[in-house]
Image (tube, rainbow, N blue to C red; front, side, top):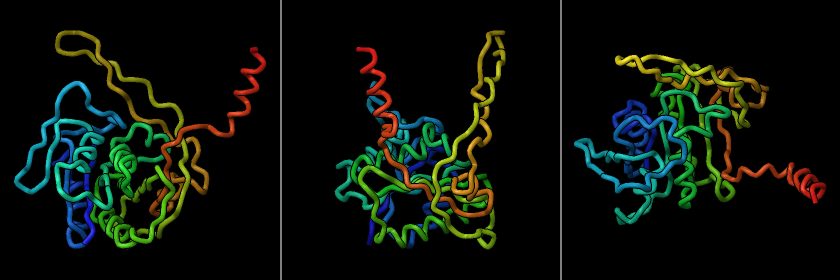
Length: 248
């Protein structure tokens, strides 16, 4: 029976994580290691300035006082005798579309699994109602995982429309779109009159062409985007070389 490591960035008590666990419980042996609080937006950060605590909960999950990447690092380590076959992160409460993947702790947890040699999938629900639908999508992908062949250092980013299962139109392989600028930070005052700032909402989609993740979920399809960790803009290498040669 395959072994899965589940994690997330919304925290070990998040309903999406429980929905993911319940959807996969009959398909694999599960290990759940997740942050002990909401770590949305933590991206790929690791905790390097202090030791981490790993605490077993009554439901068999483990909470870590660290980031999503910390959790996967510990979950894949030799704390347990068996190494997982697959890392699944989610089910995130909200979309991870386009530029969101640069900030997302959900994607970062999957990426840490990929960095450690695992096949990895990041699961997000584009909303907060139909976690059961996203759980059924996750189960479908896990059942087919043995035939998935990804290039090294890549993973799948999955976004599920917030709809009942019978309203899902199917699956689409997509590319990342991108968003416009985010809203301005919200200025507030604390009880002592000091100015503070809330990070505001993400920008609206600026590239939502027919082959993008934005377009797929808007049309009711599950979006599946292969991601890579190589951020090099290969098409620009020659331009940068020419620019440097001109400086000499």
